[in-house]
Image 1 (tube, helix red, strand yellow):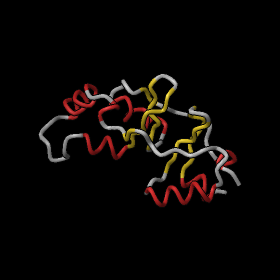
Image 2 (cartoon, one colour):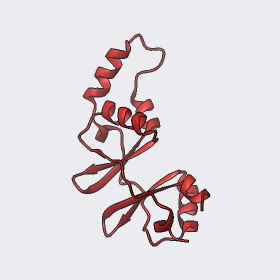
Image 3 (cartoon, helix red, strand yellow):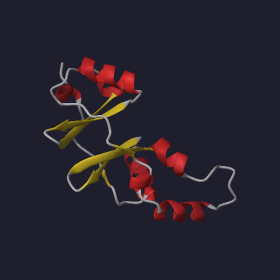
Image 4 (cartoon, one colour):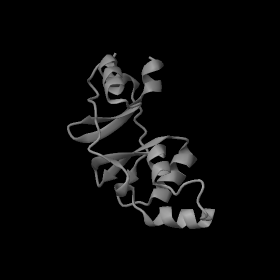
Length: 129
């Protein structure tokens, strides 16, 4: 079976110039852990909930929630995203995607065809096959 048979094609993305707060809110609203980051129609990175947590002030901080949200609203996704993410072709075998995920320690891969983001595949998509 191929990646194109299991990938998600209803894409939820974020713009490189959007704020980290926008990314966090979008992830919470859509119940997702990662977002492809776009600059126009080009995939330029991936941002995860963990990236946002790492960029956020410590839980031991004296900042209020409002102050934390203000800081996250001032920071851009491009400051914390993983640049030039590992991608896979829609014509790759699911086994190739699983191997790549294991080797790179990712649970998510953007699916790119001729330079265009056409989907995403997750560990869950592979395990459901």
